[in-house]
Length: 281
Image (tube, rainbow, N blue to C red; front, side, top):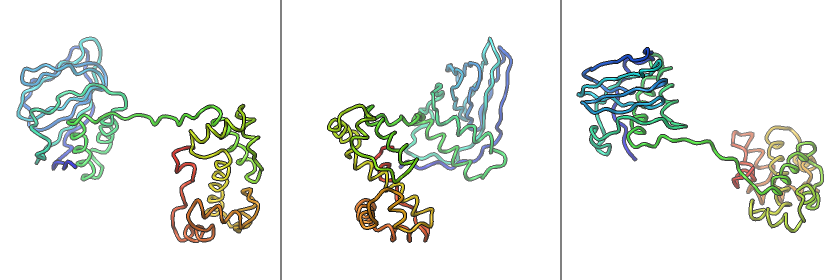
């Protein structure tokens, strides 16, 4: 695992607006600076090398060089910035002269919310947290691991989706309601045999195993957040008897309902829902 450098800062930081065609520099850099081009396009010159810095990009300015910005010629340019110093650089980070200069705009760029965080807390936030944020930003900028993405929905075959939706809706209305394989097959618009096949492929459980797991998941909530007796919980969740409930419960969660409830009341975390633990709904 790479070490983080020792950071001082952020020093000066803020937002700046420029009219069309404005310039900034040349200047001789004495410290490090991150610049986020929030609005408009720019050109960044560093020791006679010219880099495009389009809207949304992030520029790393380093000390010991002469740099300059030419802002958008056709519209307002707005950028955010903060300065910082590096007191040490881990050996595995390589030569700063080889580091990237401009990181182009990227959807879901993790550096953007980190930049916003620094602008918000730069004058009044926890100093050590701010230094670590800058160090982490710099590392991400150097190695390029900036992308994030929304977690995709868990897509199931249509018959499974329809059956699971019916299962949850039914148990939400009355957890004790009887649900048969034929009920699930009817709402899924397939035969019971086909439904069993697609459930096994998609969820690794049969339809009726999913019904039992959904009932057990609901029983954990009642054990954790109510004063109902174990027998009452068993009845309310649709189990034929307290004995049958306790046996099923222990097989899934590894201990009896009474023991699990006692641990929860002493501060333990309730068991993870069994269907969720298998990466599904």
